[in-house]
Image 1 (cartoon, rainbow, N blue to C red):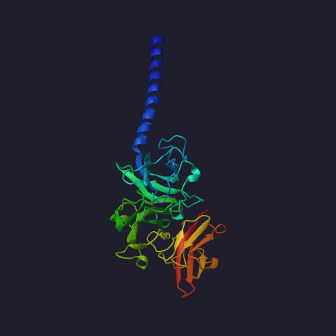
Image 2 (cartoon, helix red, strand yellow; image 1 turned 180 degrees about the vertical axis):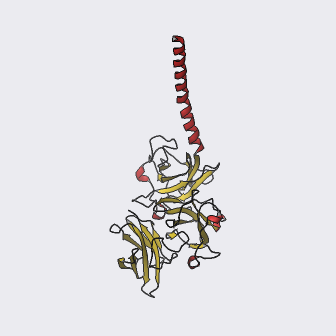
Image 3 (cartoon, rainbow, N blue to C red; image 1 turned 180 degrees about the horizontal axis):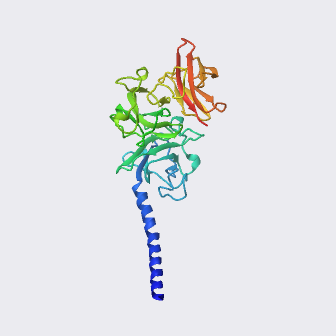
Length: 349
């Protein structure tokens, strides 16, 4: 009887020991299965590179295996490329299907981090980091770059930030919200959008100057693409955008030409001015093509005028601290010819 008890206790100890071995292995296998190689590249051609080197900081450093924790400016150094010595790169292995934030650092101290332009920022709750969404565990490498240090895009490229509101859609497809465009052969799987909240989905792309057609897709097949109304379609039923500078597009309702929550006001979703960040938290920047005398008016969803002033600048900053969360229409009136244009933005809490 005593021998049998000892055998059972030994088997139990062996079983517990095996579990302790197997569980970490399963966690490791799971981690590897969900991992993705991401290649960050920064263009330092317009900078004097610090003698301590170029680094990257972000909220992925711990996951990628770097010591010292996230946002540590001295642990993740970037390697100077031999093909172009102005370029610095680093490869990291991090979990897929997640959003990450980061900055480049010219040196190894956090105060030497770049100033990220507003068009590229996360933009919400005073967040001035860059961001990416890693959307695939395919056997390839996600390439981020070669972005100019403190710039919006690679050299000779322009940033387009797309935003679409799906709050009026019955469901958001489990395969995600995607963008199709003529510069990526209208591929419904190559550009997934990420939502920071309020059913608004967005993605940043880098393109040459020119005119481009695009659509939003609630899913990952062509049949899931929106039907764009004729009032805001360009050619062949697509949306259109011209790029001669970095641009943050207004938030369009999926399948519509205006913000989903706005009623009673007519909006031109392709106005000749840009709004950023959008959605906005503490301020809204309004950038015009030139300096003119313009009247700027902001209306809430009930058509009530909540802000009215005259501007002669090509860039205005509107404080939003007194605004309630929600959708708004901004209207501009050119004082020289009384031409009116409008667009929409969302104020978040």
